Length: 289
Image 1 (cartoon, rainbow, N blue to C red):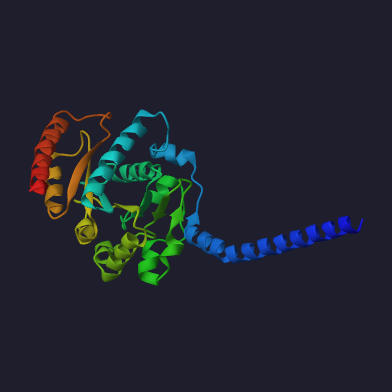
Image 2: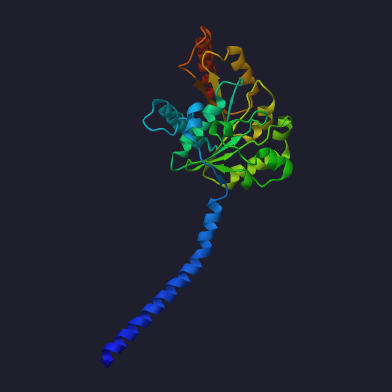
């Protein structure tokens, strides 16, 4: 009986020692877990309603969908070009408002976010007419304008929609002096901070149209590459030429023909497509040299 009691007592002591050690280990791990959690929750999580995505044709997240597959193809092409050239930032613009640049920017960002090897930050730099949060049905409390003018921390401006690996930086309240803001030292500092904070992150800037104002010119030095969105049957050859003149110092990696199944205006699409083919053959040749 004596031996049995001693054995039980020894077992209880060993168990208490083991529990104490486990408690100490958990206390050591706790600050690290809290730190990781704090780093992960830097942006405000916001729900996305499918109704808004449907209304504004944000479809890249859908499975077994032909239109979503088009954006997956675009994603692969863009990521390959950017990886080969070491690019991290991509500006998306068009000749005019209504050409679909914001729709393309949103769908491309969502499609890239679906790639588990990538994280994406979508930035609304159309400071006069911001629309990204409208397309998602979000009313952000802060944006870039609040950061630049009032010094609101950028962490309070960031939004995290219900798409993994995607963050959004809204423009905030519309600004009339947008080109001066985009060309300011504070905006340059912000662009540098966004680019260097996470080395595996792709940054997509939804830029204003090239022919609407001088905003894209002011910000182009901060962008590695540019996509030009052309509205099928609407964008004229003269507008494409003017846009290419605006983007002459930018690294234009390609065009996106938007609304290609929509209503076409006779004569315009064919001529514009032929012109673009010749233009981008020249661009590729020059870049290869």
